[in-house]
Image (cartoon, rainbow, N blue to C red; front, side, top):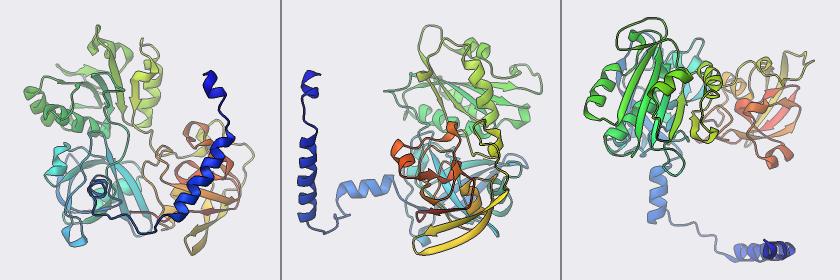
Length: 399
């Protein structure tokens, strides 16, 4: 430590000038994309993938699983490999909006090597994207998607080898992918899954999980029904007591959660009852922000209901009227303006844009910007609300 304190920090400024000289003297020839490392990066992290819907499985009137395969006519011949728990973003162009929505991959990771992905979409009340996919995207529909993204994945260096999964509704999808990866030998962990549904008819992948658990003893599924009682099923809600009933008593475990925001709010209270450090708790992103008045730090006295938003994307400049109770990302999309986005919850930073002028509100619990972003007036479109007329610079979206 004493040696570190003796280092003259100004010495690094001289090194920085030397570095700039070396960069300036270097050739401008682009790196050969044919190098093996370049090919690998392009295969694992494509900016965009072009696919089409090859099959649809209906789980009822409000839920479908879409199978996506490469659209060779548009240039995609292979799909990027992914780790269980990843998601993809889907670009949707409706009659009135230009949308990007994230959907967890429900297929096994090996499916990518076999040439397909699967996403499972459940209808959301007043949800523009989910309703459009369910009602207007038949087999053969072309789609533009991102490469695999997200951090809701198992990492042995960080997570316990035993995972207690807590899922609700369509939050089952990343766990189904993980369960298949465990059964295939692609993940070296054990999954004990508590899955909350209203009735037995609302359970997604019910038969599929039964078949999987019969051939793999490292996956256990406990279905929890809130609205009915049946033999062989737990009744009520997923609570701390229920977790302790199935969790090991002599081994460390991690808790992974995925589901609606109501599930997270309820589990936040329940997990306080467990002798479990926060570092062992993981959850998928909370979902999209909606009414800003739901946040306790929203400034009072914001009387205006609409403001003028000027958007600069490269050389294109446009001014639109937007409501103050929608995020900037929602307002751009609903005015047909394509904006960069992936997680829609303030985590990934893909919608990173610059505030040129005006006042905005970013809820503290969703504001994951770096200190430098705040200092130099950068914001995340997905969790920022306008408070006055404003101007923003937005990057060109990749998908």
